[in-house]
Image 1 (cartoon, rainbow, N blue to C red):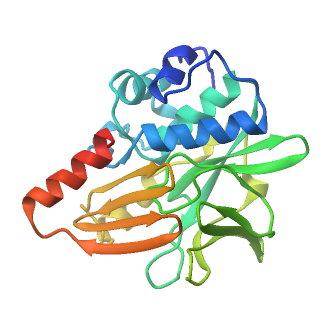
Image 2: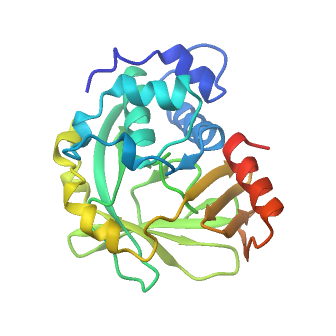
Length: 262
């Protein structure tokens, strides 16, 4: 993937990073990851219309994604946000690989293996999960590929082996461990967008109980806000709350807060 098609300075301004181009360190990666999640919302509205007819992610011109998300100051979905972040991190000197994932369903089964896509970063002999395109709730900072428990803002995370795959697990404060998604690190690829196609997911997406549902999400300093249809989830300092937004004005207020911040 060519990174010459993105304006690094403009991208950094979009996510609120000042002070010049950061060095490819773990400290910088953590800051970039969290700033991205706080600045660019997850928004699946109109995403299907932005896909090419053949559903191959490599066929989506990177400049088009950049124009929509960075220049146009819109949100996006995993294959847009994580593809852009892949390009940014590569331009900054990180070793970045793309990997596909299967998201945990409500009945604890997993969806299709290519339902989600995110990045792995290899840095100083360690591998970090980097995901700025998942509606959440999930990790706000890079997560090490390790079964060792890692705490972030009141929630605990770990990456455990399950057969030939790894599963990201999350535990909120006073809650139980629960899978987020499953992936296979061995299939990660530097230019893996060629291997990820969505045409095989059309029937699954159409038949899903969430078909046609709008997903929106944005990180806060100490957690996340997620809106799935009219169900509003918050995770702040590890404490989860869920409520259904019945009133139109409340729904509009929460939607605006997620989309523009505040």
